Amino acid sequence: MLHIDAMFYFMRMRMKFSSPNDVRATSTDCLFDFKIRSIFDKFTKDINAIDKHHALALYPTGKKLWFGSNWGEVDHIFIPIFMDKRAHWILADFDISKWYLDVYNSYFKTIRDVAVLAAVDPLRYILPYILRLSSVLKFTTPDRPLTCSLCKDIPQQTNGLGSQILLFIYIILGFQ
Image: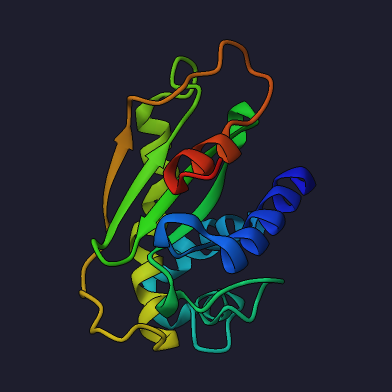
């Protein structure tokens, strides 16, 4: 998990200070996904399980992470997601203006779509809520879950080793 957080730390630093092609982006850390999944059941029963003082509500302000950016000033949020049963990382790219999640899985030979969609489902509901709580966006957030799709035309791992999350971010942002 630390290697993923280290990669995303350096990506946030690079995205904050030298993002090419006018793409404005930031990322979360590994704990973000874990926190969302751990509170999702409570949240579905009572949305007040997350209030403006909850750790999740700090992420959109950019104050939770080193080199974090205010989500109201970026176009994309990259979210690493750990697939527990297979010890594999996937990536969600939240396009704020389109209210859309693109999900990248570099090992769909082993990690099936149904498992990926189940892992992403809590994000679809909690991301809109914490954005409304934090009031960082300059537009009114839609009061509906995020739309989601699984990206299929992406490089695939041939074995279970390695993580291609960084490669996906470089492809999306056009880093050389």
